[in-house]
Image 1 (cartoon, rainbow, N blue to C red):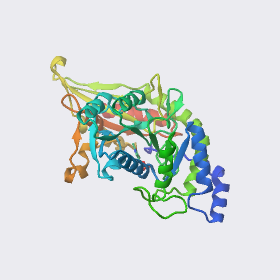
Image 2: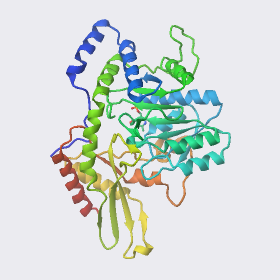
Image 3: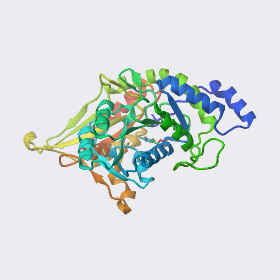
Image 4: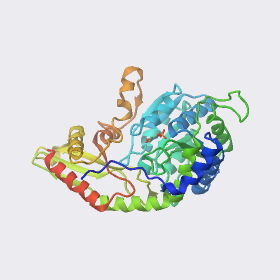
Length: 400
Ligand SMILES: Cc1ncc(COP(=O)(O)O)c(C=O)c1O
């Protein structure tokens, strides 16, 4: 069997055909009527006041952080160590200093770690960036508390957030603003694209300008640090129709989650090591994640015959063995997110960063060195999932 790591969940071609033809015949490929329609649909779907479409989430994050730097006059940003590079790059591109916080067992920014950094640098933090990792909502209530207590804005990298709920509400209404992606691998996929959502009219106005080089419509003056953040009409058409299928797709995703989740945690041991594999994301009383990926974490416990004296060791070699084994059996995998942010190669050249964690090893490193995203997409069959699980069990029995 050959199972790809993912397949994009696009709306059926027939649903987009007419709009694509009309748009093409009109010659208007740059954002106009279809992008406006998509923005209106996002506002309604997420229940938020403003939605600004962008070329992609990375550009949108950079522009949003540039705006916050300009407004606050501060240049330190708190962000998590376990995320996609784009979260950290939004500060880096603005010449800001990142303070890397630890994460919890679901990969979301750790509240205690954020608070330690806030206390260490009073009055110096421009913003905190929370990430809804794999569509599992960050601790938005706790981050709101810190934001009010320390007077520091929180923004969210909600790249995986379409389809996710917190309580019974969609994401998109938290913090100063949230930034969604509609890139190919996301639950709402349109090739490339992003959306900034906010309930603040000033932020919305700035982001409308930021998506157009910082121009006000019809004026070539530049009012804020920006770039070419324009989405294309084609992508807005695909995303608009995709939105009508999103709830149906979430039903598929959650059913496929059930099929996988009953097999975890999974473990295998011998007289020296115990290897345990568990799901990083799950449902909780408040969170209905989008499951942008189904990611598992490999943990290795070296007890050497004595559980009292044992300790967790770095799982990277075991994780790499399992990935290779699965790939050889025709199963696509990705190591999301390896390496952790402080270990990105670019950082070792000229970019040091301050990190915060408790204990010997940060959780963001244990997650990054132990993570495997396994095949997960709308339309994956039960048979395919069974095959993945059986090969994973085989790999585990051979990895130590
Ligand atoms: C957590 C996270 N943030 C930001 C991005 C960037 O999104 P985009 O590809 O739309 O720029 C990604 C992309 O995968 C991501 O995973």
